[in-house]
Image 1 (cartoon, rainbow, N blue to C red):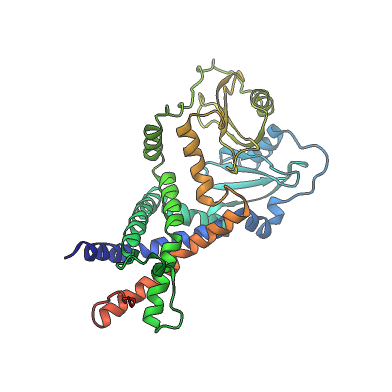
Image 2: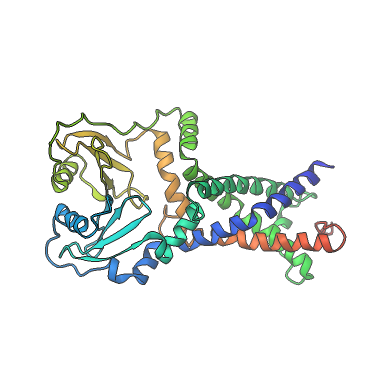
Length: 367
């Protein structure tokens, strides 16, 4: 078996093995590119309110939610990003019960489990195949195989006669087998780099610790500091109000607050997440850790002054969702998400043709 034949076999059977998974991931990812806009359109009664006066205190809002759902534990709060956006309180975990609250009246607008909303279900499908950690790992492995498919595909695409320009042309008037081959070959080379980037950034989200260590090693950067643990409180010491902690975080780092991470243990800090105008990350990568009892600032992470390795790692998620340059890159990311479907269908057709008749050979172009 020649080297090229081996690469062909590797490309073919990897594609058949992981193709449907990549199609599922790509299509769901394309939908999620405009997830926020879709959710506002689908659930305006939960996500949109009329701006009227001052917002209620965060503590008051959270107490209302706790009284309504006494058996659930607040996990995090999404702060309104615009005057019309509502509060979102995540209960128990990041992917369980979502409670929406009007920021001006403090009235609960509604609630649902994440999997009960269309976009929430698609997100769980895209990130963990509705199967928790096992599904997330499977997607990470699928991303690694997609990287391999891109590399082997580029090797097979390289014209044997050295005329590279021929590799970018589709013979639209050719017979269907030739047309199918050209569509697979040409569309693959056009999206290969973008698929590589999407696959790598996706893998980095699944195997975050490993990829982060690799980036830090390559860039000779110190690792991100571990979250701090405050001194154990005295028995009976009350926690500080969230509103007071938010004011403290604003003094330390004046920027828009996007999320509040609520402590899930008696010694855990309150984590205030912030977004600077220069950041492409939708939630920002700035964190202020505060002692929930004393209000002491335990640690501050500033995205713009972080080590190079951390800044690179912080950029992977915005790149993955196409947020780095606004609407144009988001639209481009939709096209990248649709590409695995075209490549799988055309590749599957070539494989079926090969099994029905003589072995498939890539049509040779005349010299």
